[in-house]
Image (cartoon, rainbow, N blue to C red; front, side, top):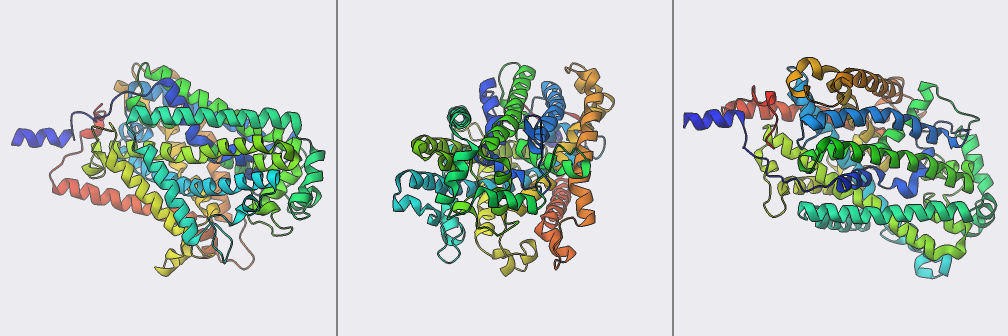
Amino acid sequence: MAAETTGRALFTRQSSGLVREVSVVNALFFNTAAFIGGGVGWYPVFYSLAFVPIGTFAWFTTYGWGAIIVGGAAVLLALIFASLTTVMPRSGGDYVFTSRIVPRVGPFLGWLEGWTLAFASVAIIAFEVPIVVRNLQVTGRIIGIGTGNEFFVGANAWFTEAESGAVTGVPGFVAALIVLALIAVIAFQPTRRFHRIITGLAVLGLLGTVVMFVLGMLTITPENFAANLPIYANGVTVDQLAAVAADGGLKADGLNLAPDSFAFIAGIVLLNYIGFQYSAYISGEIRGNVRRGTLIALLGALLIAVLMNSVYTDWISFRLGLDGQVGWGALYWGFFTDPALPLGQPNSMPLSAVIATPGLWPIWTLVSVSVTLFPFLLCPVYVNFLSRMQLAWSLDRQVPEWFGQVSERLRAPANAIFAALFVAAIFALLQNFPILSSIGLGFLAPVDGKLNLVSTLWFSILAAALTWIMPGVNALLVRWTRPDLVRDAPYASSLPILGAVWLVFAIVLYWYAGVSPILGFVGIGESESQLDYLNRTGVTMTVLAFVAGIVIYLVQAARNRARGVDTSLMFKELPPD
């Protein structure tokens, strides 16, 4: 009995239960599906989200240059992950690295990093699910423009409350549950089949993106878009949209790289890039040469991310008229209310394309359907990587072992998959009903008691801070704190340099785009209190997520001590393979 207790004090079990069934191609499209989401159709909408001026230089906008610059810096992150994953090929990604590399407080920091990333990821799922529904409306409007059919012309009423006309309340929640059920169908597939589905659908989505770009560049002109927009948008003109951008201070001449402005754009880009590194979180299932597979998957996905956020987005927007696209996006985010939001929809690229060339509506319909795949695909991919992180936590006794139980049929932690979907459903409830206000937490959603898309986005950016910062810390420390682990790691001698440069980049970005604006209450309304400002921008929710993570860590540590579980040596070893 004593021998059994001693053994269990160090290891939770001898094997994780996972099987290496993920190919390099699977890993590449896993990363691609993880970062694209709704952006593939909605990237022009993000021009105005940071609420800073958008200018142009050479062939790109401020946003496009942000994509290129952040992408160049993210190459360092890819090299760090490839190096550390080679010698620590375990599911859990940077949680495993931080908990083993950082002295003394590593397990706590690793837990907090993973916990806040998990919350940020569920918030992103909560953002993407309504986008799936919204894209179905957009697809209906495209068909309506092409055919004049009243059912499709009235697509804005699909899944909406009769009183508000918004995708919320009972119709919005039912639609969200249907989307989550479809996500569950994919998420609960055996590992090999899951990745085949993700890869196949991601390829279809990318094909639609290629058609959007090529045909858009050939057929769309600023003139035909400007001429047709008033016909379909109740008289709203491109000049009116451009005036919104100009009068709102969202238009600039040239490129401004001053960190107090450009960092906001870089923060939005970073949000749109998060996920390109997620194959590192399933590295315990990648077969073959882990270093090569991880590097190809990360750099390949990063290249796609840079091209889609720069060439794809900017060049199509130039064909539509950049200033009008910036103004339209500002109307969608609710920054301004005059004129009315064109067609009652965001400036989705297929929707803008059909306005410019209505005769091509069948093609734009297919493009709209294909780009709808990506906000949907992001969700099962996030659920998959979240389940692997929960597995890593359970192996280290950071959470109860129930979360890490691997199903023999799925070869995946089924309980963890269910937990991620359950929390996503809770977020859907909070988005569609004013539950927060009814239970005394209305300060978290000060507008109408419901979580809104913008606050969940800013919450995701803030909550993911450790996810972007800690890889730099790990690369900087590992040669001195764990030389035994990185003795054979690729780029081992360069890791401190890679880590230091990436760390400076991440900290500067978060200071100017996160900490400094919060301290200065940038963007606070005239009649808005400081507390309401913190609530509206997701800061309060981020603080609560950190506090909840700390409490859970302390409770679980006390639970382990009460059960006689000694974790002091556990973090000196890698988790079971």
